[in-house]
Length: 637
Image 1: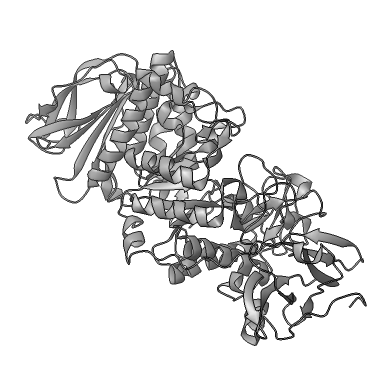
Image 2: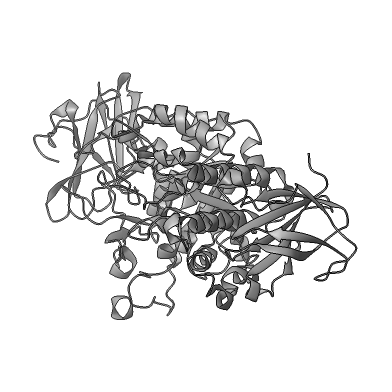
C-alpha cells in the first residue's frame, strides 16, 4: 500500500464471508447488492461502501468528488479469496461521482468505470453516481405470467425512445414518454412495448447495442427513478415492458481507459472467443463463473428493481459460436473440435433457469439467426430455455417476396409457404424490427414493389399476413405510419405523414389488426401447435392466391385468411371453408378507411354446400387487389 494512502475510517468488512464465497463460486444471486457503491452505515458512521471484482489488479483505489480524484486517498482492501476489492468511505452520500483507479500488473494506472454503477453522469466522463438501491418492484400476483403466457396474444411495439418523438430537437425524457409514448402504444392495441437498450452506452451513439454500464439506465433520458415511473405507467396502461438486453458485445475501446472501460476483466483471453469482428467489439468471457454471475445477476436486476417483464437477448448467435463473423484462418476450432462456445451456452441456460425460478412469468426472447437446435427447448432437455426466438428466416423470405414484381412472384410462391415447414420447430416471434430499416436498407414501405398506392397496398397485405401467420408479432416504430424514409436515429419519426389519409389509413389498419388479433383466439391460442393452422389452397401460384385457416379451440374459434398478391381484383373466387353458415369479413386490407380502393363485400357471406378444396362447404368472394381478407364464422357483433 502507498505510504500516502489514507486508512479507511472503518475496518469492518463490507463483504461478508457468505458474499465472498458466493462471488468466488459465481453463485451470488444478487451481486449488485454488494458490488458497486452502496450508501450505508458501518462502525456507527454513515458513508458509502465501494466494492469491485478486479482479480488481475495490483492495486485499486476509489476516486471521486469526495477526495479530489486522488488515488492515494482511499486505497481498497484486496479480498484475495474472491478477487474483489473493497473500502468504506465515511460521509460520502448519494449523488457523489466516482470511478476506480486500477493499477495493472505492469504498473500502469488507468481510470475505470464501475460496471455495477446504478447511475452514471451524462457526457464524456461517464463517472458513476452513488445512489441507493431501487426498491423491489412489486407487481400483482399472476399479472405478468398471464400476459406472457404461451397461449396469450403478444404484439410488440419496438421503440428507440431517443428518436420516437422529439421536442425542439431534443429527445423526450422518461416522464414525457410516460405521458405520450405509453398511451400511444396502448391505443394502437399492442400488448408489449420493447425498448431498445436503455443501459448506459460508451458514447452518445444511436442504438445502445454496446454498453459500459449494464446496471445504469441511460442518463440522457432522465434519472433511474424516472425510468421506473415509465415502467409503472406502462403497466398501468396494460402494457408489458420488454428490454433489449445486450450480454454479448461490449466496446473494444473507450476513450480514456485502454481496451475497455470497466474495472472488471470481462473479455476472454482467447482472441477467437473475445472478438466480434463485424462490430469491432469484445465478447464476455462466459467461461469464467464470475462473469456469468455478473450477467445473470444483471438480468434479474432489471426484473426485480425496475419491474420489466422480459428480455429480448441481443446477438445470441455471436455468443453460441466462436467468432461467427470471421472465416477461414480468422478462427480456430474449439479444443474438442467444434465451433460452439460452451461457456456461453451454459450461461444462456443458467440465465433462463434462474429467471424461471426467481421471476416466474418473465420471458426471454432470443435474437438468433442460425439453425442452432432447441433455442426454446428447456435446458433439462438440452435446449437453451428461451421462451421465444425471432424468426429471421420468415422475415427475409417474406420481405423478399413483397419486394418482387407480381410478374415474378409465381416462381417464388415458396417464399411465403416455406416458413410453415419449420413453424413449430421453435416458438417464434415474427419480427419486422429496426434491423430491417437501417444502414441503407430503406424503410419497409420503400422495400415494397410498385407505385406508391401499390407499395401501401403491399404493406397493408404484409401486416395482415403477419398477424394471421403463426407466431408472435413485432413491429418497429414508424412501421405503422408507412414511413417512407429509412429510420434516422438522430431525428424523429415522420409524424407529418399522418396528415395524408393514405398513411393514416395504414396506422388505422395496424390498430385494427392488433385488436382483432387479441380478440380472436384462433389467431394466437395455438401458435405453437400444428393443429392451429391448416392450408386451404397452397397450390395456386399462377393466380398468386394462397389461403389458410387458423384454429383455436372449437368451431367458433376459426379464422379463414385469403391473400391476393396481384394488383387486380378477382371476381367470383370460390374458396373452401370449414363449416356451413354465415362468415363475417372482419378484415379487408383494401378498405377505403385504410387507404385502399374499397373492393369489399357487404360485411357477411353465406357458405354453400358445395365441396371445394377439401371442404364440404365453400363461399364465393371478390378478392381485392394486393389485398388480404379475414373471415370469421358467425354474423359478427
